[in-house]
Image 1 (cartoon, rainbow, N blue to C red):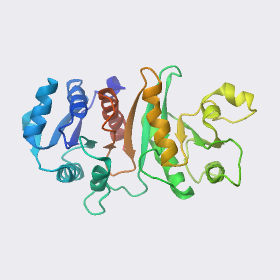
Image 2: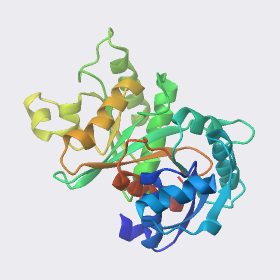
Image 3: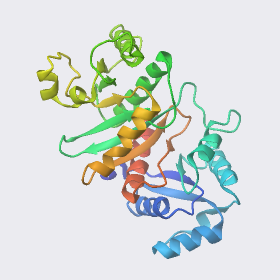
Image 4: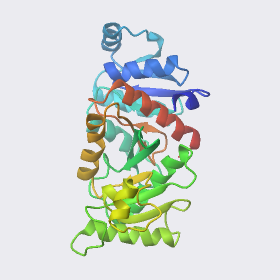
Length: 296
């Protein structure tokens, strides 16, 4: 991924830049030819963090701003005006960061629904898995879920998947009137079949997690589906399911890394947790480069 994105540099605006892992990831992205940067925050704090981590930064790239809210606002403004290509979260609460992104007058809202996509690098499967929405839309209705599918498909296609396979997840793979997630999945599946949503993708659901990812589990349960066992995209019912699923991956899978990006905004937006590793943040910068180039 890093090699593929190094041919053209994006400029990343890091909001509240006095964050060791985010700053280190951005400096490494710069050294790899992946990105240039602009750093928003207090110069003294940013320089101190860089020095403590042994990072060489261009102090001319620092924009002096006091306060997390102000740093986020200034970084968003730089991206909105075209002074930077991509927005990245530093040492700041997600709610403060998103408030600047979602501001109706000064933010980075796109024309439709914005949603978050986690990207897993699953080495033993030899492919990437896209998980959405696990960070932004809390309890989406069926219309919003259809838009989340659209955004996730755009992200997957930005990575070169010609026809992404989308699994609409629920606790069970059968439609159950008492389980709304299964009803929503069935509706969106039918919408996709009639080409009302996610054209150029294969969509099916409801599917449980095991039979979405394991062909053997699908065979044992007698599920005949072009998606079962081969899903590229996992669309979750709500933020609770999605966030727990996505964040479990790097802790439970040895060497498991993931990236996090916002799709559907006017410009690429990187959202990672403050607890995410340097590698995850570096991969998020690379993921944003794919989305930036594809215009997704």
